[in-house]
Image 1 (cartoon, one colour):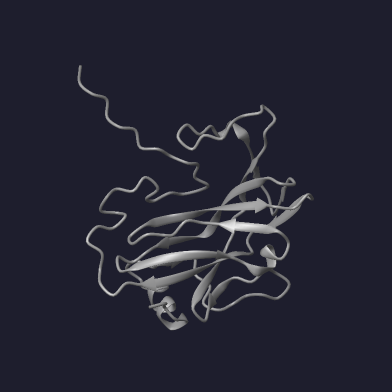
Image 2: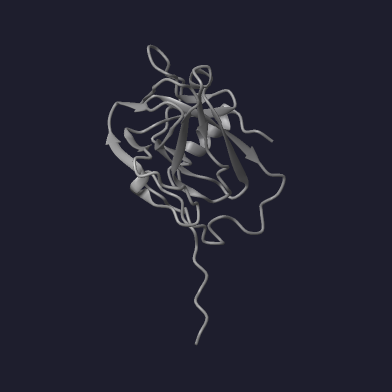
Length: 193
């Protein structure tokens, strides 16, 4: 079942464990890319922290051995992504996902219509943190991303039953992340000699 606005508001404003904070209880859209609660979702904002991909050293992207040296960090109100490149950012909002809920994210149509794709993997039950966002500029021109404005929409899907093992139970590697978080691999323990 997808959660409606009234349930999202109740969960987000729970004083013991708010699902979203800060939380915008209505859509804000005048002169900006919209954010806030919608009929069946929540449009989150992108913060002003960006890691912009650059390949000045002709590096190879290796998810198992990732180097942050391929990024230039910027704290800015407007991020310029080079043509055919990408940037990492994070949400303004900090999320705490309930144990019976899975969250899927979709990009905003305003960015999609400009050739800018927003990618986020699902937020699993009991995951919490700032969401790391990937903005891909698929165009041959530089592209702008506006900080503190809407970036993507989260849809909250409630399961028919509570899962046996949540993200928190298994000690997920991105649990509690703050800021823009680069790829991580959990290393296998070394065998005893």
